[in-house]
Image (tube, rainbow, N blue to C red; front, side, top):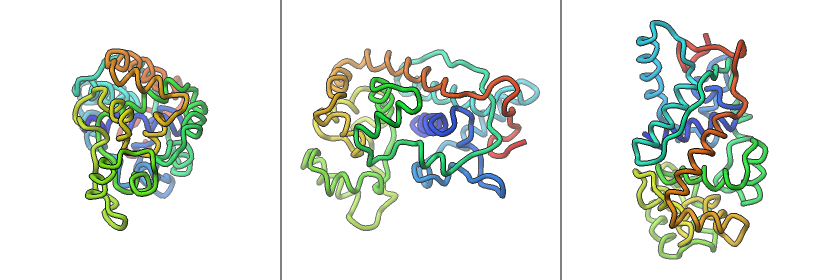
Length: 263
């Protein structure tokens, strides 16, 4: 569940800023981001956010904490629970009154992206190459669907042959799109195994392995692979930076009563 909450926060911030838009269900006026390519049949953790929201509102006596803030704090706490770093989450975000599946498809980095596409994508959100590498390290927890890595294991050459064979048992050429593979060897621990895997050509996603493929990010991947302390410290800094992407504050947006629908 920790990976799910971290992914939700990431995918939320990369669309129109950290505004809780990913939490909105489809309706006559909402083209839900839950149906975007990166989220459909993949994004999870919505029920957990609902439970936290209900408990917080009950404790406060009324809705005073936004769903966007709850998501940011829950993402941080889930990382800590899995052995990762902590950081101070700035609060005061408000919730959007709209969502955009089109914007989600255009802004969330795709698993088939090249390194240059990843760098450009992050740069468009005010994040640099270091942020790209360290935030991708969030893939140290969680799983990927077969549909997101099939091309990588059957068509790419920059992958450990034995590792590719193992993944082919999980992900056949046809069918099994929803079959899951762990994103690193220790999918329930927030450690640096993800980076060690990249160094050994064992990135599950094409976009992951692109960060260790003879390009400008190789040195940083190698550093994090043997220095988990540096990874944890830099991850915390980049999460604060990402959490500050275009938040709605002041009189903009609203504090939703229910995270799934606008007031």
